[in-house]
Image (cartoon, rainbow, N blue to C red; front, side):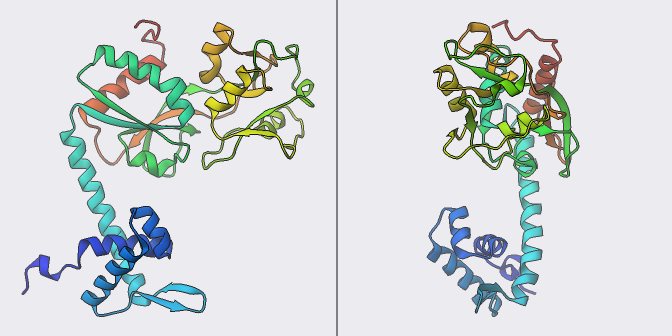
Length: 307
């Protein structure tokens, strides 16, 4: 019998095939893999020659995966996912002084970074890599040591979760914006409102905020729109209009006077932010240390002001 390595299909070609089959597109696979479309096509052809079969057919509707391709895709995806999990677990075990944590841009910038800075003063030998993305989801959190997700704490993915903090969402504006702080949300209707643009991460928008108080509101066409919270709050601080400000992001600016409340009433959603991590593999010592420290800080057992 041939040695195992001679019976296996070319693994690089298999990885290219898995991406092409998952997207049902050579072009999208190439974008994901950061290679040219011709490179994907060449690897697929190499795999087809090894297997002596066609994996994709070009039909009237465009690219279609063949029956052999469908069978191979299911097995290849399972095998590659298992290899990825084993590789991550081994890397986790050996990275005793390093961890990665993923969060939205706003949470990473306003809430997480000050805490990482304080943690580093106490644990200088532990390296923390922060990955911020508004494309965050449960799958992305599984790919990192730790993640911070907004929700009800009950995830479809295999994640442990620990409560960190509730969110309150205020209407805020610059210190000299020409509008007196109001008591009722409906008094904001007709004002220049600054909007947080859509992304994969589903932020609370002005329509949601008003709906929480029983008020119907549609975002007018031509409204001022930015694609991340730091830009929105900078615009508000420059007196360009009224913006939504999450308490974790605006509390310091409200305290130092660079922002002020436009309305006294905040919206308090029924979800919260949670620290999450894969429950199917152990945390490495660095991630375990930071998890315990962060939960203690969030519970008020560590003074963030001490630097």
